[in-house]
Length: 597
Image 1 (cartoon, rainbow, N blue to C red):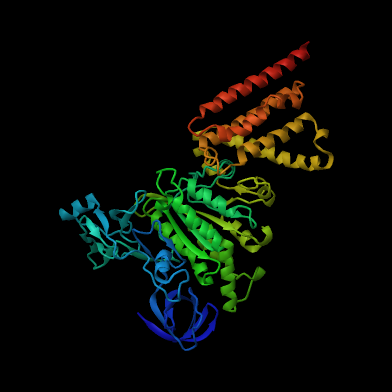
Image 2 (cartoon, rainbow, N blue to C red):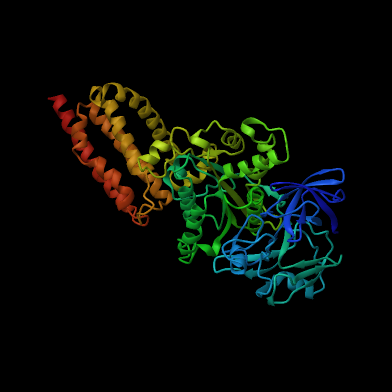
């Protein structure tokens, strides 16, 4: 139902309009003659406060404001994959073709190609029941049929969660249809089209939340072994400018074992989004050998685009993720960056003259962060399949200060924290994830999965983290008195820690062997390093100096294994381990013999 009002006041992207008292909160509004899209964020009697998602330069007081009577929604159906959208699901490539590099206010573009025909294949069991006269309840999540969206993704056409019920009375036969044509009809007169609308601020329901006991394997050793993220988990990557947040997310997007990748560029610089838009279509999917864009969806909201669209972009992204989750896919969201999103909230809050909280952010900042991160999860879908949405949000604290509100509130709602360290980044240590400031609360839950890969995963992980903590304490002493004053046992800790940093934690994303590390290789590398440490400690106890151990060349060999041993040739690790044991046993034996003599 259309409700018309008039613009009374304009304050940047915030519009006050009278005559819209009968509209609903979060209804979409079209403002001015150009029909600029906005959303009602507050109602005060007969007056509505609207945030607009487009440039409103030239808008005048007295201009018309029309409520469409529906909330801001995303169109969900085949054709999403490989598309580049803005924050309100307008296809940017289409808009570029229409208006050039700079969009004009009020520019429109259908989220999906309404003219393209997709080959719909009805569910065989469902079609057979319908022909035999059997009653089929129109329950939410019921799979009506499938559409081959890309070579990597098959889109399931399902009964939407908001269906009123009844029974299926018509099911489309196999053939080519547009997204607006019906896949089915119900006895209550409801039509179920191939593509369906869903409000972006409303989480899509599921049947059951499952335990996050399966890791999201990324191929990044420091993440998978030290600070693992589970499927359906939520993680944050905080770090100052230039510490590698975006590069880490790019690597995870390419190599993680998610079925679908959704990258949300929220308020980032234009050149960074340009890198994403140019690199992703050229990246090869390591699983299929085809382009990565066949299972990737991009949402681009650069820092020079309207601030209100930045605020809504993460809700659009997570709604698209839940759509694929409900089909039984595992989805990974890269949100870059939630700090820019929070800054959009701060600006809009100031325009609405709300009372500011800490550092000017609105008092509801923690609530909005929770609403976003709580939509992550591994679930049993309404159709009975298993799917997940994993959220990895980048945080850009000013000056790298992790005590600022966005980082601190984010830590309340995530269980995996990958803190980026500027000193590591300046030393060209990639990924620059600090092993002292980072943590993961998923480690215990994914431990059974990792122990099926290697029973010693938890043991070597604990030993290694303990060793790095001891090395950190020794580093303070070394800065004061130098390493030569330390006993050989403590020098060995420094040597082993250096091997861990160079041969395990540091990873070369340009090395064809080292850019991705399979789980088995990750644990075996760490096993060999810890075995070197234990055997070397025995040698030192027998009287062997640390210089003799270093002269064996094992330190350099261990550091090179990550790039010399391919993922499918792990037997070479066993050969190196046998050689290492033989060398250290011989050294230990020679000094034990001297002691006896």
